[in-house]
Amino acid sequence: MTVIPYSNRISIRDFLAWRGIQPKYERNGYGMYLSPLREERTPSFKVDYVQNLWYDFGLGEGGTLLTLVMRLERCDSREAVRRLQNGEKRDAGSVSLSPGVGERPAVGGPLPVLRPAAVPALRILSDAPLRHPALVGYLSSRGIVPSVAAAFCREVRYEVNGRAFFAVGFRNDAGGWELRSERFKGGSSPKHITTLDNRSDTVIAFEGFMDFLAYLSLKHPEQLHIDAAVLNSVVNLPKAVPFISRHPVIHAFFDNDEAGRKTTAGLIRLCPRSEVIDQRHFYSGHKDINDYLIACIKDRSKTTKTISDKQDHSCRNDLQPSKADKAAIEPPRRKGVKV
Image (cartoon, rainbow, N blue to C red; front, side, top):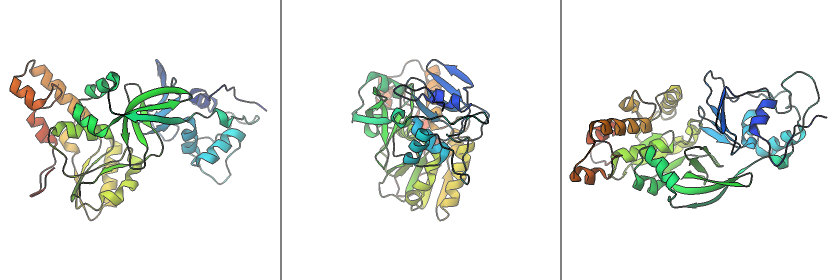
């Protein structure tokens, strides 16, 4: 029986290669693939060779080899480990988006075996207030106001294959974390939505937490008085419906792409009793709110090299957009309701 080589871990890169999947291009420390989870023409499936983690930008999901097998085979973690361990073919009646773990890329030949002890896992070690200069600088480069980041994010340290890393963490309602840094985009289990309940009849909805932070940075220093929901992945929309649908008015701030269009349409369909307001036109020409915020900052820096003490006090720092920029992105106010 042929055994795929392994040491203390199974390389996702080698695992994909064994399945006949090769990167479309590689950079220092990572490779970009056509997603094995769906059909696409432009590679948006990233494999971090250093941390041995994957992230599908089209789905907004990522994780370890084990979670990849779970997605490929549509099975739970125990079954994924069994398939990795035994290299067995899936049942004849099951359906997968790609060749089974037990199948070789070429027809014929013995089935390989992967040892479950080698399956890597992302483990959260601790969380603390945001202090590390690299993380603070990363959020600053995204235009996020420091006080906004401090209110909603934590400095999370995590471990993969015995190696420790750190990232900006945004917690979801199930206790999992969305993790971001200059080099990494992913998260820990369980994957879930994040909600803020201010007992309002209006809710704002976002695909990811960076857009939520960008929205708050655009409105800073105003406080958020309405409710908010962050999907943390468009596939989490059904999980968010019970919370979102109870609001008579829903402002949707999804991405200006096909996934954003479908998610907006899905929200309208799943919340028939609510008024769903598509706010994407406010940042048309930009992929999302965060891109819009960054563009506003760049445009402003080009036209204004210095600001008065009064402007500096009102804007707090050069990363703040102008009042016109802020007004453009805000949902229309309803009488008696603060946003």
